[in-house]
Image 1 (tube, rainbow, N blue to C red):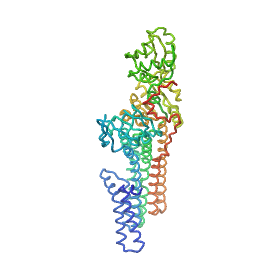
Image 2: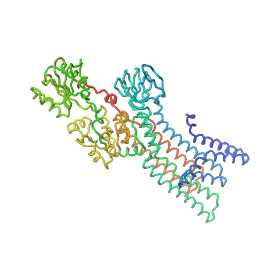
Image 3: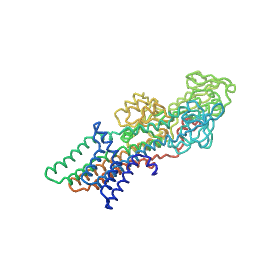
Image 4: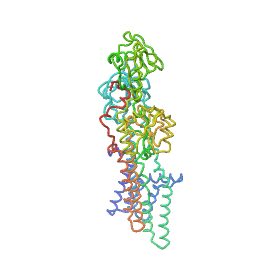
Length: 638
């Protein structure tokens, strides 16, 4: 711990200043010659004060007068009137406060950099049947890599061979390992389980989800909140006002014959206690700590400003497809019109075996298939194939137009479509034998996430979708949304969100206008589409909707901590300043009170780095991986 702290230069300089201060104080108490203890105090001034002095003088060239220079001036003034101990103590406490701030800032940065440390430095590349150990940074899209049991995945990619369970908790926050098989997506930095996987690299390691999350969170540390920007605007005139009052506290008493030394001592004490160090440090630590904690839980908040805006949202709105639903079809119901279900399943699976349509791939897994004698795609209509000597057609209900005895089938289709389902009809030798209803699978955690958001915000959630009203109402009812609008174009969604304090969550592709128009836009990151990372303010890397209310609650907690910091810092400044102006405040107490308030404010903000401030309750129904659910839609009949 201490070794890690001493990596920070400010800590080393503060330790040196403290050591010289101790030498000077002991020498002075022991009655040593003045040159000895004054020399030690001068060394204390040099080691602990050169940094603030340099920053303050550099700021003057902008021109800008900063609080660092106030501290140095006060310390030098104390030494000028023989108060070497008080001046050196001010330098030590100020240097220690600055060192602590640097340590806390470094800790926040470390929590971000630790994301990149999750990615392994080496990887096993497969080439021509041979294994080659290479630097993970040298991998390129298209490379095949071997991930052995217990190894970390070196790059984002797709599993081409092998089966295993992968622990994605370090990146997505999902606590349970997820099963991976050929066709599954894996992310750099996640930990492989007991099976070996062959992975086709999808993108350069420097552009992985892990790397992009780390870069975005680092950029968030550089962006300041509105409150912080307001404080910095006020800081300059406030500091000049403190200097003006300090000069008045010196000039006016001296004009009326007061003694110089006590007048200067009181003025310097006022300069110290009135400096807004704690106020300057009040807002950014809690906001940045919240950004870092959310990033470790799979929620990328792009800046402290966005974390502040997330705390301000008053209502929430969601897209349907790909957000509240997985965007992948699943079979809802099978209706047999002729024959038995086993035969229907076998004919459909065989006919759809070579289909490339998303619905066709789901239907191909409906039962055993031995393939078809011949296969033909019917664009816009479905497929046709010969199976067991029977001509089978599977596809859009338009196929019924040329079918025999289709009245019953048409009625069945109409009934299923009225319930918001997509229907595929099955014909054998031009006679309807069945209808298969499919729906867009609703995310298992969606209802829980909606409920928690409405509890936190105290308002009703809205559904904004371009889909038809029946489908919109079906999903809205399933997840507990009472206000659903359908058949909306992207521009319509943006128009409804503009000027409101709405948190909008979409899939980050066709929802880009709405994400940009909303007060805060949250995109379902998944494997991290570029558009989602660029257009949204918040990206749910783990695609867990339950993480969204947790992020809102964390943002509101960070706002409360920042406000408490501001109130505490202002109260300390007012109390100490009044004490000095109306009574007699010893410089030692003034220095200790001022710097202690700065330390308390910094520590209070950085406590939000603790994982106990992330509250994402998930029911057993939502414990399955949403990423896995996207990749492997369950075709089983419910």
